[in-house]
Image 1 (cartoon, rainbow, N blue to C red):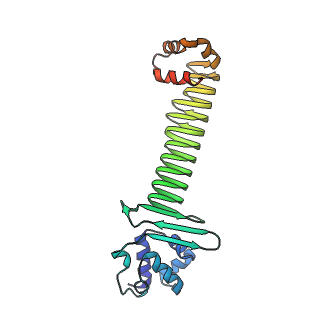
Image 2 (image 1 turned 45 degrees about the horizontal axis):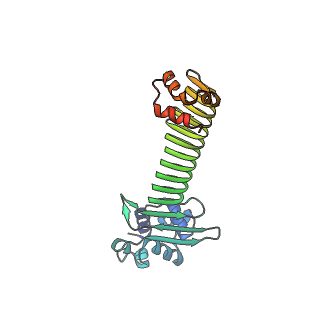
Image 3 (image 1 turned 120 degrees about the vertical axis):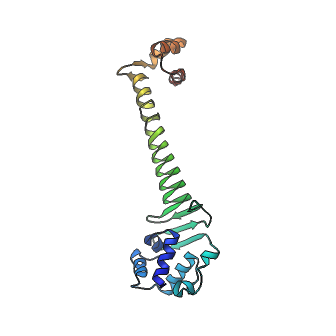
Length: 262
């Protein structure tokens, strides 16, 4: 096996791209591409950086005369590099689960991807993902996608963010959901609460509900529309009156909407 083949095998075994390896060593992607194609050879400084990163000896990397240390005693990856335009840090734990590192942290200038059970990076993918852009079961980031998502823009089954799209529930400056939406602007197929609320059941400053709307101003295409003043005029009999008007509406939901006025 030639040097270029060993380098390619080590990189693929680590599951990283040529660009990611280039960032680790501090060279261009084209340089790594040439090394793997066999059209150029890294200098001794880059060879040393490659050997340290992959956990192998220089002798193995250059001549292939001994087994890579990573096979007998795997070590976590820790990279500290300063390239002049920014600091880059990467940590990859040697412990894996389902083929993924238990922890992978990859931070620095440009597109730094982290992929692990716990992933933290400019772009993070994991069970728990934290990053500028993140995707995971639990996701936090400027842009977040997950079962539970928290971010500037959040998309998930449950989403919380400046702009939130939630299948079951969404809360944020602008919230959209099929189930429950809470926000300055809230739109839901079922229940919407907010400064401006639109749904089957809606309550807020401006409320529009196809079944029931309660707000400072309220409108309903087919059901009931009540202002907070009208609710107050009904007094303690408001709940009983609404139940007679909307017999199929759950009592807990009517109590919730009436209780918003406090």
